[in-house]
Length: 439
Ligand code: HSE
Image 1 (tube, rainbow, N blue to C red):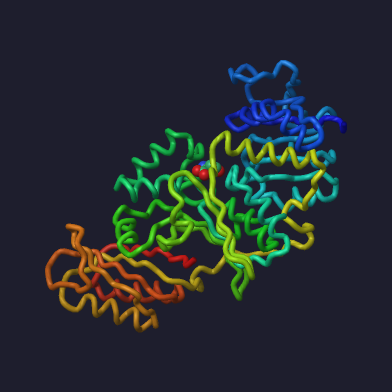
Image 2 (spheres, rainbow, N blue to C red):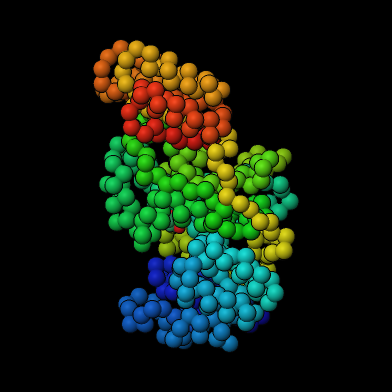
């Protein structure tokens, strides 16, 4: 039998500890599937003294991640510390330079330095595997990189952040406030240490940059992703969306357009009938539209120790089997530069919620301003504070919410029309605008 694969793990937090356990409990299965044993030979973590409930008696402790990365007793360096900077960056670079294979769950590191690290892996012959960085246990990286190697991809879009989907689901189903739901997400351990990273869309943007690279051959770059978070979404938006046959999800979307690859993260209205709209709670999902085949939707756990460890150990198994795919699915020199999408040219349908002055002519003014921008209205609903709705604006005093759905138009036309409506003084406050993504 081939010699055991010697694994070194840097970082023994929730995921790291689960990886050690999984390699131990699945030892026979891994050995049978890989044709060789997989053994953890060395680890490192910030505190050696911390109680972890792990069997580490035969495992060496490295003083630093860097020491572990170049340890001759390590064939495969597993980076589970997180963060785009140190100590993860230098340790991963050192391991790759030493010709070792690297497995990481670090989306931030890949979104910032992915191209450079892939180049190093290519030059030195090691693998750089990162299935756990996106969608945890859902094999999205493998699906795009290997399963769909022969398929031209037109669009990938998905729910890539469990915290946001959990918040939006509970707000919709239980009518709870954004803050209450966020607190619960933190208590349950879904949210990042700094939850603004989740709710402002940056976590999704890093994951999307990785997926776009795999799908379209772009040079992975978080800076090329347009980002908007979910903090402006209100329970009223979720109710109105539901009445109109939609749900609001934080989507990451990468799509091929005539002007290039558009990468964007924002709250999105999706038809209730779509696969992605059925995905509730902390669950993640990715839909892939490939030329000539019906859409593929992958759904599953996108966060948590066990789900992330499942993907990390599968990546280690690939190293043990000797599988070396190009990290982003093609040689680094074939990856293309990409720029941030000019959202003013974005084309699609829009949900618009306005607080309209309740007097005769308001609806006509709004409709006129939209028509001037050649925006066609699919539906218009006025919601009374008591929750009922009509399709006409009555002649009474207090401001009332008016909700519009437009047919496909350009984003700059929407904002030009809304500026004109504001100048006409028939609405108060800032209009709420949510993009619609068709399936
Ligand atoms: N905070 C992330 C989420 C964890 O909520 O999905 C997984 O990246």
